[in-house]
Image 1 (cartoon, rainbow, N blue to C red):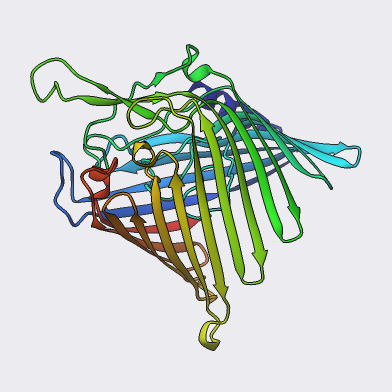
Image 2: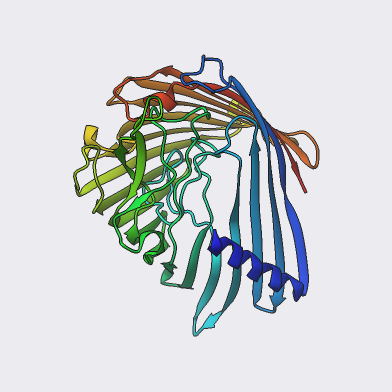
Length: 407
């Protein structure tokens, strides 16, 4: 992507004149095993690979710095999963404006909005990198000009987004793929296609026990609908493909978290216009996430803490929704052992209330040494509904292991 190359060159040029430099990052060795038989020809039962994500930070002047964070992944089975990206490549400068402070970031960056654990419907600035992980919500770097102004009255953030990035999907030989292959050539509602200039805004504040944010977005949707394109020629070359279609949308959102002792009450809600539903019709709609979290400290007199969480995700379009999260219930427990190794165990259950889909998610994280850490995870699909939008990908249970060296 030309934007990534330009901003990377800008960051490297800044590095040449930096007063201080800090280099860090992660190198991960990863493997997955899929116990079920492949659903499509060419798919493998096991995959391996590595991920390199270094980060370079430097101070150019007293109030100006730069950050450069590239990523490279190699996957032994899916050529679409083998890819490189620039997650961050921006210059940051800041100062004071009367009694307020300001901060300006120019380049590629990642932004997070929301309070929910499983999914964030208000989070619309960055594109998802779905070849990385189906649940962790990794993000592609987004070209932006990001201005933040903060004071006693709260924090106001304005975004100018000059370029749209397409969502990544597993390839035809990758596991967790859709029934029909997804075309790499996306279609856009705007004549400017990926060069349409988008705008976003967020205001956030804390009032007593309540933290909240108000958001607005106008521009190209990060979440595509799909057009079916019938190929011509002899089978199997004539197999239909899905073409991602990115509409022009307007979205208003609110997220809030109320903290009362060990209880946390969470909410995200949006109103979106301009998007298509599963039937290909434009439909204005609302969606909401409601969550409740309870912390249990010093469990049974030990050093361990247990956090219990439940979330309900609802899309007002119901079965017409082209989102995975149309009517889902998520229940999870997070057990932190508070030991020297930082051991954490997560167990979650996800159920679709509109379709017969149920899954378990298990995860264990632990530091092995000062630099090495380990992550074990398993996604076990207990039931999958052929009428579900993501039926094919949801049939693939897997067991994964990561060994990460941090430097």
